[in-house]
Image 1: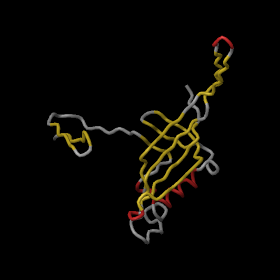
Image 2 (image 1 turned 30 degrees about the vertical axis):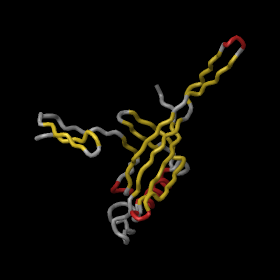
Image 3 (image 1 turned 90 degrees about the vertical axis):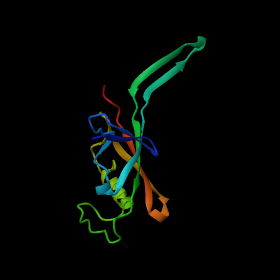
Image 4 (image 1 turned 120 degrees about the horizontal axis):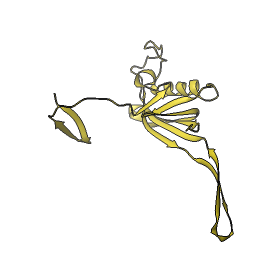
Amino acid sequence: MPIVFSARPGQVVRLDEPGVACTTDFLSLDPDVGVESERSIVTRLTVDHAVNAQFLHTLGSLVYVYVFGDRMGTVTLSGLAFPCACPQDGDGQDGGPGGSGAERMLLWYKRHRASRRSEPVRVTLGRTVLEGFVTGFNEDVVEPSLRLVQWGLTLAALPEDD
């Protein structure tokens, strides 16, 4: 059976040689954000880490560097929230809360923000685990005719242990 995968948008390449199909997890979130639970997908991840350092410039072009460890970082997640399947979906019969994806993402934020949750949220990038506390959330309408909403989460990331 041939394996088909896209090389570039708009083009497809077919390989007739045998191969091994596999899947890899690029990104996962605990607690998860998903199409079934929040009617949302994650479309972007940014990671920002920094060292806690001080530089002392002296006469004669000497520079002393004092390093005090690592600073808290920032992890941001962005995604799209989709409208609900039907206008009357408010009873949560599918195992989750009723409402649109925008409402469900707002509820996700309210449940997992740092002021309500004592343990950090875990973001796994490949095999690297980043832990942080949810400190911010925003939503904005991307396409009003489709009721498509873009959302963003901000996490204060803990420094990594080496």
